[in-house]
Image 1 (cartoon, rainbow, N blue to C red):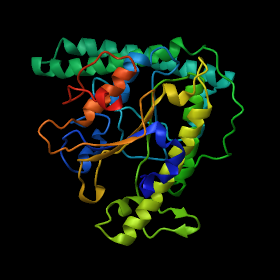
Image 2 (image 1 turned 180 degrees about the horizontal axis):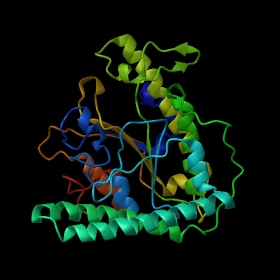
Image 3 (image 1 turned 135 degrees about the vertical axis):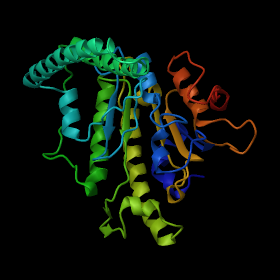
Image 4 (image 1 turned 60 degrees about the vertical axis):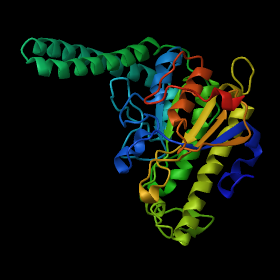
Length: 353
């Protein structure tokens, strides 16, 4: 039976699978929460970027990183460990997806100017390489790799700057809901634009970070007793837990709305987007009140998998799978030939059949 927190997803109960007992065997603490997409070591080559480097290159944007409101940290990292910034305003994402001719001309100017500046930086770095010690050269090599990654991304954007821009009748409100208390409004708008981005094949890889800072929500006319972050550190106080569940239930309502859109919209082959899109929901903490990064809450929807189940893993078992093993299944479902993610080297394909 669906627990209270998942009841907003009841209409899609046969289109998602819930996992418990999975994690990366990562260290506990605030500093490791953003290992969710990275594996055992925060800051490592993240799941979304590994996928983007394989299947994202044929779309206008190999990947798009988003957040619902302002956040202080990132969760997506390149192969070189470079943290990728997130778009925090729905209007900025809208402009990126459906740019006007004037905006496109300005973007091209900025991209080409940035590319020229990058050439100067690379030349300076090459000259510097001739006069540094061997230990510094190793660090400089990492710097070169990061610069080449930026150069590659900018080159892709310049190449696609004149690609046809899709049209849409979707209208944003006249303001960006960036105030902390408007996170849920921002979340719904981001989900709307994500569905449009998939429908128009503007990108094939997206991440959305839903942060939990100090925002005090008012839900159904009731102002909660504390901020989202404070509620997550509830200390087993039943009133705080009840308020936390109210916030998380609203997040589930937002997700349900997104899944409904993906089910109604179709791709170029006429298939529902939900059938051809893997939706992964999760967290880098299993128990924020104790800063515990074990037994992470994980939900996978769509993507052509057999769903409608709860898979409970005994993480104490000797051969217990890791969250990375699930990630391998997701990547293989997308056609990627890979057999390792962080500290994981198996997959969970047998659990989806």
